[in-house]
Amino acid sequence: MFDTFLAANLAAAAPGGGGSAADAAGDAVDNVTEWWQDEHMQQWLIARPLKILLVIVLAVIAQWVCRRIINKLAAKARTAPKPNLRRPTPASARGEAREQAAEMSALDKAKEARRQSRITTLAGVGRSAVAIVVWTITGLIILQTLTINIAPLIASAGVVGVALGFGAQSLVKDFLSGIFMLIEDQYGIGDVVQLEDGIIGEVEDITLRVTKVRDIDGTLWTVRNGDIMSVGNFSDQYAICRLQIPVGLSNNATDAWEVIDRAIHEAVRDPAIRGDVLAEPVLDGISEWEPDHISYRISIKTMPGQQWHVQRHSQVHVLNAMQDAGIRVPYPHGMGAAQYVANEKKED
Image (cartoon, rainbow, N blue to C red):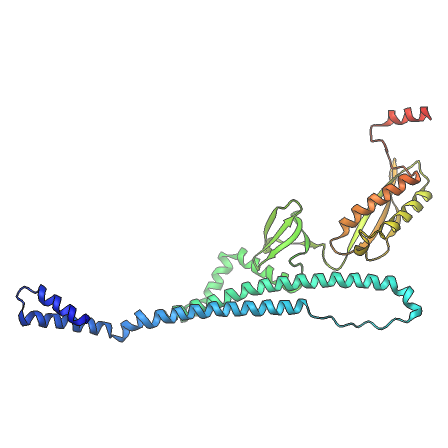
């Protein structure tokens, strides 16, 4: 139909009509048909676009499948049962081992939380790595489909690497630091960390190039991995809660010691923090002796990241106990209340 229509229009448009116009129309139709049936042209108009489309679809499917596999493996690792290697405890020794068992249980919870954090981190980085690999291979296949010789590109990878080494040293440094950070398990998503720039917060996201930390004020910090020279992890295994309890010199040191020791042991048994405490508190004794006060140091082993919660709760409990027992802190009425104290003594 297309040939007949084209021949009729060409014949009608020809100045002299007749056989010469018909011959010209036939030649035009033959040229169009020959052009359309040319194998090279069909490759560019049909075969190669379809192949490129197929490659892109397969790349999308491959990335989706790999992400699904990574997510399933991560979910399976999170819910994997832990072997129970503990031997049954004799009835006579159960009472003595109860506290040690409770501490081991809390440590197990801390290790499990750390393991979950590492699985989340590795899964996220794995998904990013899969995307890079899949789309890099897809790009090379598309270039090859377009008859672009990719052999020089692959051969020049060494030259590109040298160029990156000189021209993008910071980028290479970031990636290498990110790789070693993952291998050494320095921190993971959900950990509370302190960076050397004074940034303290929870790790929200990790890639091979940057780490994102949300601080206590809600600010999201994005730090390049190559710029992290040192990092402190508050969420690894356990933490130590330290308290400094100041006591005025007018108090009896032994009485103050007994009141503080009794108060801190009662504080850690409170249901509000009992699950965060891994061991009995230790009253180290007088750690500071100043002209106007002495200071008692207390150390409490806690769950990772919970030392501040335990500290806040324990300080309130110790202060109330000291006030009930009549143990005074230095300057109970404030630094500038000397006249108030003098007046109080006169009234007494």
